[in-house]
Length: 424
Image 1 (cartoon, one colour):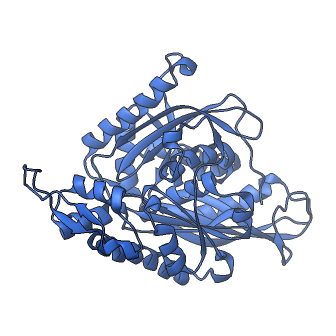
Image 2: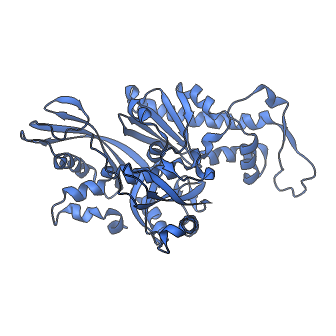
């Protein structure tokens, strides 16, 4: 496994999490040689112009992005001294990401294996997936073999004739990515890196042992539920289902004939993923759709609300379980699940996840940042926090980085190095 290089102390970095329910921006500064961040500025706004993780209205999305970034800049104004934010690392929604497994072989002819040999193997694999239809997002080496001996985490300094490496590569659909890039560029920002949402959430929330022994992160967002499988310190699989918290809210609005705003409030105040004995006797007030007169209460048993929510939440976890079963990663997945995302905080959801997935389940929150205000320190902001960790610690997994450092002058890789700026 290649060693991760941390960003230098004092580096300023920004993360932009573009979701279906909110857009959030964190500005952080590296405070030590371990790559730890101190969060200087935070901004977040309710999303507009985004549906199921994809931009459907450029103008609306641009306005919200600008608002979130300006709020973070204002909070960090003393440090930034009037310089506007220029570069951001951005999340890629799980529904736009596809995992690919590749094996790459290179001859090393008996000499000591160097960093360049590792990059040569990774770049060779990247050549196989270059396409006009999708963009390469992550190139993650998993297992190395030298002359048939496997289980090698870091081959550098070892000697052999032949080296092969199993690689997890993640691609993103070009169309939605270009729309996202347009909205961000119209906000006068440059994308410096992309990271799959659930991967970022895992980097923010998982302890080292969970990453090493096998763990699945399930990030339940507004329009999309993304998940990533970690093993041996690496992400080995990523996927998503196009259902999230907004779909639960829609079910409540339809089932109880109330507005989306009131459905969201009912979900947060009284909602649960698991039925209890008290639900039949506890009454909740549901404002009727289109009625201005709120003096007449419309009481319904809480069991009605829970009965609407539980099937949808079960469906989310059953779809995730099916995709995990189909991945063929049975032995590597492990017994541990960590839930993140705003909707993971619904009462009883952790217990329902444990029942459906038959795993040990906990709620995750960012653990690798300092200075995070309480209001943004929960599971809903795991992806935003993890984007900073990714760009600080895992930049060696960025395809452009690998291409640039294996490039010879005038080669195709020089052109691809600025993949986002050139193409878009």
